[in-house]
Length: 257
Image 1 (cartoon, rainbow, N blue to C red):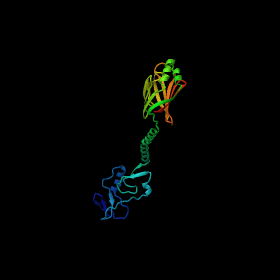
Image 2: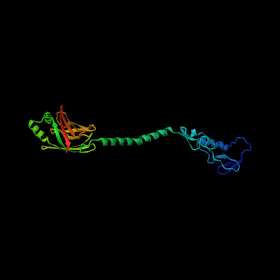
Image 3: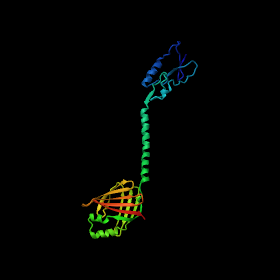
Image 4: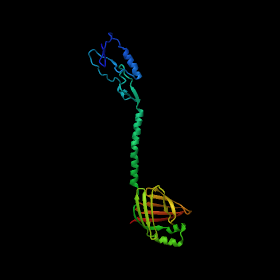
């Protein structure tokens, strides 16, 4: 049986029926292990016949094992072939899992943001007062004299309050016959305003609940009672403003005009 070189050259084969060994094949296998396989490997073919395609002889489980074969299958042992290159698939699966986790993170974050936006209260509107408690006592603790207290209480009996809200950003304007105050702030960011008695302070507003914000105030100069305020929307549509100086709490209730 002749030996046909893949490039087209034939070599005489042995006359015995025993195993066929060629020095060139042995060299090819050795060089293949080293990674420099011959450019034209030898293959034994029947005389006058074509080279029959080799099929994978392994089991289906071999293809689904934890390692994949790149190139020729493990069942192929032709002369001059390179050993199969293997790589583990566990790292690949871990990488795919990380990609899936990363891609789902923005979706989870977007979901949380949309939920917050859907539940955020709406303070916007023009508000009128319907009830007030302890306003004069609050002014007294702050050190306002009797005459000014009487004027302030009368002026604050019918304030006009305008609120504009854009997410966590607020604009609040309060107008009386005595004075008008305007504040702009964003939840979680410090800003400057004035206490009820007109002293400059630093303020920081935070959400205490879904419908209630709390503001802590810190005087820029001097000393005085600890002051704070809260604004809360009730289920009945009322706006409750509380102003605190030490242990005195003034409560004022508003409804939309």
